[in-house]
Amino acid sequence: MVLHNRINDVQPGGVLRVVATDPSTTRDIPRFCQFLGHELISKVEDDDLFVYLIRRGQ
Picture 1 (cartoon, one colour):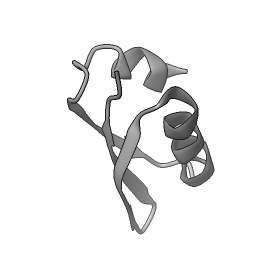
Picture 2 (cartoon, rainbow, N blue to C red):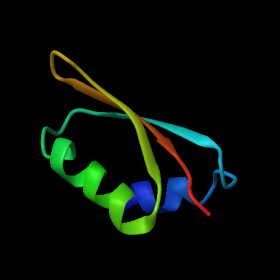
Picture 3 (cartoon, rainbow, N blue to C red):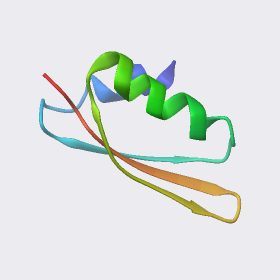
């Protein structure tokens, strides 16, 4: 998954902004964060775009 590679580019405690068009991300990204210990700071749905802010865990 591309998200896994991108979050590794962020320092622990840093924030990654993710913009997606796939509605399945509303399910997948919160699970990703929970499973790997990252914090989902915000989730905004704007028409066909889904924008997430993820704080990288340790």
